[in-house]
Image 1 (cartoon, helix red, strand yellow):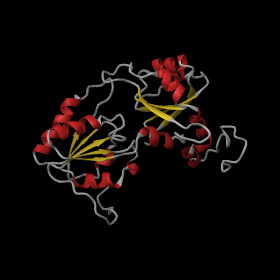
Image 2 (image 1 turned 90 degrees about the horizontal axis):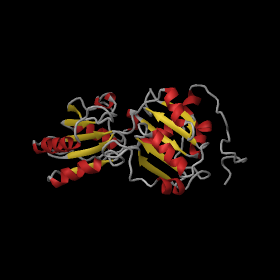
Image 3 (image 1 turned 90 degrees about the vertical axis):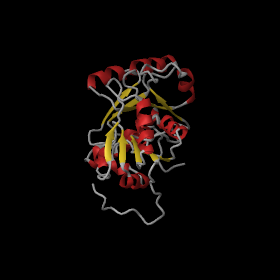
Image 4 (image 1 turned 180 degrees about the horizontal axis):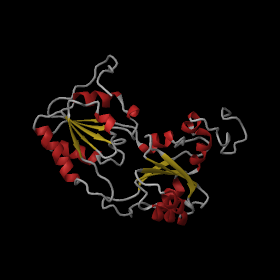
Length: 283
């Protein structure tokens, strides 16, 4: 990558000294960056980036200092307070600061906390949304999070709380009854607890489940399983985080929409995985 690709003509915002832009880098594939993100990378004096930000994305900011501030479950990580205050310090030095976060900064990305800290310290901010893994990562796996024949609701949840433990604040009974499709971020560590809660809430053991690891990257893997067998299947497969987990009939659509497999020459496994018995274009 280089800075040779011009941005379309227009009034692009200027990253001023002393400002911090909180920007979503998307789920992995550098091509999923927004133009606002590219504009920010080209202007920054310093880029503070998360663990899931691809190194190739940083190539678009060769002029900037790159500071790693990744947080990964179970591994030594910078404290959130220290990261937030580091942003304040850099802005106070007059730096043009880009806080680059995987996915979208406001979707389980701690962007709200960091932005609030900055505002409380008088640092001006700009928010640049990104494609969240719960949407973009599943799309790369051929799984639409909404489909008219499947769901009129989708619920995004996190698999752990601030301490890293299984979250106790989620009402799994309500989630199970109220949402046909459930998308779980950071749920691998507590997948046994999560599946037990969903089964106890009445979700069928045969319900389709997909686990998408390192979504949208060249290392992406997709495990298709069921709610009743996914714990054993995950262990047997060796699947590891980072992963996005989807529970619901939308997973079945991968049988016809696995576009990456089709590019590789694989035939669709089932042209009518929902058993509609009519053409997809039919109302």
